[in-house]
Image (tube, rainbow, N blue to C red; front, side):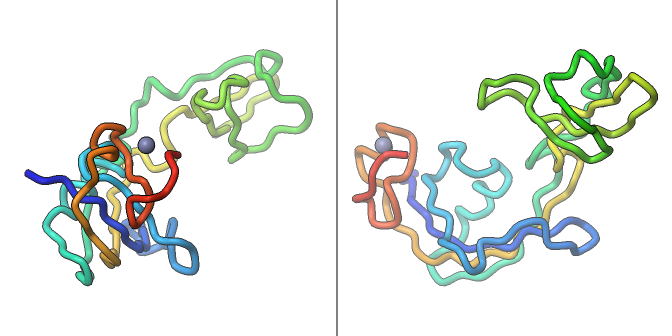
Length: 159
Ligand SMILES: [Zn+2]
């Protein structure tokens, strides 16, 4: 199958209908199909849509950010945290200076112990995307070689 570069707008909602994220008012998303640039469950379902299509796409948690893993919730001592100052429930920070280090969320504070949740904030959440396909074109050879889109028209720089 020929892979496409797709440009689309989206609004993401949780099962209660709350808007979690949207591209409205910003640039649309541009991605290469099957390259892991967007979540798998959305990538798969957008393949059926042509330019101009508007659709509601449901992506179960398992095909989005995964199910919640209870083992990712751990209690540690406050003084083991790489964070100075006050902590409160809901605070998020990276566990390391490495920019790819996991993000953890403070879910409980009990004296000098803190409970951290390293699950993705959207783990276990079924997602609903309202999408509009702005454009879709065949991927170029350099895009296929690099595994990512080079902008809406294929002439953009590598990210
Ligand atoms: Zn590139």
